[in-house]
Length: 379
Image (spheres, rainbow, N blue to C red):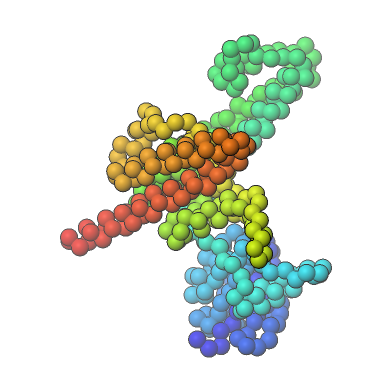
């Protein structure tokens, strides 16, 4: 199509800086507009028609609202990974206008990398899962503050009582202090621990209810991933919300790179150097996968909980999960036998765990899609 206009948007909470790059022509600033749906519609009408526009903006705190608004107007829009935008060496001037011009110019040249954009329902579930993750971090901080307060005053739980269990909380609730200031401080710290605990319970209950309303394909992937050892419901739904469709990755190594769990490399000529993992991908996915990978330090086995999760799953998925147990445990044993640090070993196991998760998820997606097609063919 001729006369394509490439538009870069530097979006903020209240304003949007706009720049336009003509096909084979100049790159110019179009000014600044309010960040409202009405202003966006006016912009499309002025620079349109919509089918000749290609618009991009960087992913950031404004989310995907602009993307959804533009696609509803029939405009092709892409959300760009901000860390992968080319930067000139020595460029020390940064303004909204210059950022929009750079986006438009780089977008026309094909130098930008778009990110995957979830739909509204998927984004809602991801917000819920991430809120639970934030609550777990708040709980850790609250528990640390309380335990350090008790330690400063020489108070420790009796031997045989596990920290933060039911007996521990009963013991902590009975503690009293001589001074009013200490009593008030302790009451606030203890209340915060209880409050965050109740908050986590509410969020996990909400996640369980949300899973029941998932589309059939997504629900099949969540169930299938639970065939893996160390991957229960919360881990599986976190993987699905962070990755979306597993089949959008043609190879498992692409999924590993998306999680930032592949080795960084600096090679030239005959010299090859690989270092620590890149950590340039999805941090939420990387964290949950590494946590799950610790389960493979144990010998392959199927416990009661894992057996219950695998009961209703297809044999093909369970077979992949059983292969994963043998492969990943063997990998753990070999690396630890060489004296590699356990944290590094688990990271290597997590990288391969993503490959098995990819295989299961792609199988579940294809099976779920073929089911409705077969029913339609029969009817």
